[in-house]
Image (cartoon, rainbow, N blue to C red; front, side, top):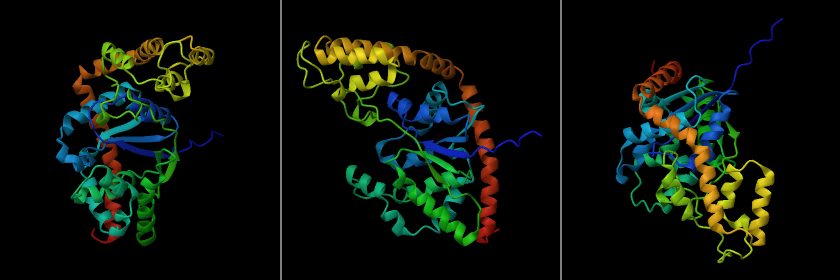
Length: 332
């Protein structure tokens, strides 16, 4: 007898459109997502509604969304193996989010550690309703497509707790309309920027996926290195150097990596040599990605088709879930 085909669990995850992505996104998230596509039924979406919570910073959501999709596709997200779409292309999301908000205690939102942290860090004097209710829309994003697993880093579990609590509370009151999601713990490495802080567009320390090789090299040559090695022949401390951290990402040969460590620690190698070699390794790695991105950018109709097909598939699931939810709460 033929063995029954095992159903793949559904993974749902999204990303706010902040414009072109950098190598921190590539090695921190996109490679992990791309590696999930054969083992899970993946739904990846552009969270463009979420971007509106930062309207005061000035937005170009439509263009930024396209930039993100180009980076996704060039970095290995495959529309034949994943469902790729924009949040705003799913008309069922707003009413579903509204229904979930009716059953969300305000106290849950006020206790959300992310809300408190960002209000303090960003010095927001008057947080808007959407900012406070952000986790409810996140919950809708997951439950709308019957998400079973949400990939998160090990320090991000508190961010998903409200989704789990809300799904459990809704299921307890109205029955199993959608699954209660679980965490899919993933290792998302934090990639250092050129100033040794976490790579971020807002810090101005990022190396972008679509960037030219010349610009990439220029940024690497200005990169922060070991502060305890002021002179070329001084012994280095590779574990404190962001360039060596990136060596561990781009250089797969352990013998080569060990030799870099040895010559750094002995003072035989200077920081300029390390930065020059790292720039070359990064450009070699990114070259096929950049070439694919250029081809996609020249064919916007293909990108539109991918998003349209993804929205159609996601919308079919969303229509069922919204209908079942409205019946469960007694308004249909």
